[in-house]
Length: 277
Image 1 (cartoon, one colour):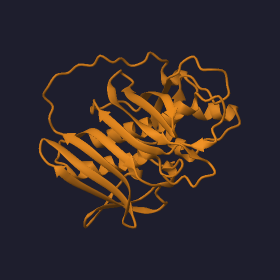
Image 2 (cartoon, rainbow, N blue to C red):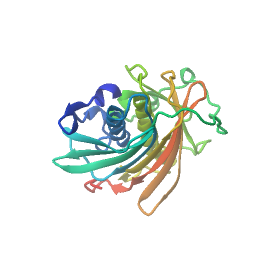
Image 3 (spheres, rainbow, N blue to C red):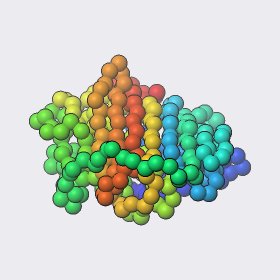
Image 4 (cartoon, one colour):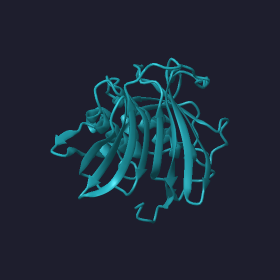
């Protein structure tokens, strides 16, 4: 287990930053949301003080190897609304890139016609570890960083779920809520990315013979204010076709504020393949 704050702590270099990829945040390699969290940390280091993230659009170009990476963050459009290009590299090979819009602007309309799903509170629900243990299964190490409480749990092959949407409470273990908006956005990035595949997996009629590494990810950040440690993810994977699994998700605070929405695609890779994208 490793905190996300520690796992995204960048060391400045002459032309950017460097960091050792934390193996605690691996699934089929470094989790896509974890790489997006590193990119958000880099953007937060180069934009003017008072900025917050608005949009992240990321592409996963290839699988990263364990070890040290370079992080380059360049402001391509400065100002009250800025755009930052972020690249993650190993041996001068870019394996991940993102475009992140940030802003310091606050004045404007406020409305929200979306409502958080009505679900039991986390203390009323069983843990993800307990659900897996009852079925004689083991979680990959990525999930050890998170306290997860599914509203309805199902594994492939069990009775059909009552709800086609995946609803889970999460909190990041052994970690206080980040003080800055980029750290809070990083949590939403991890949750939306990871639960695209989880939403697909729980609806299957049998165990898949394939993995689903992230191909792309787009996130919109709505409420960068403070919140408690628990967050609700409401996710769905309504379609899979032609070797691509698509999914969307939204992240809510326990008091009903919408933190972020987004979605992305996972590339279907048979387990006997190399899992290179």
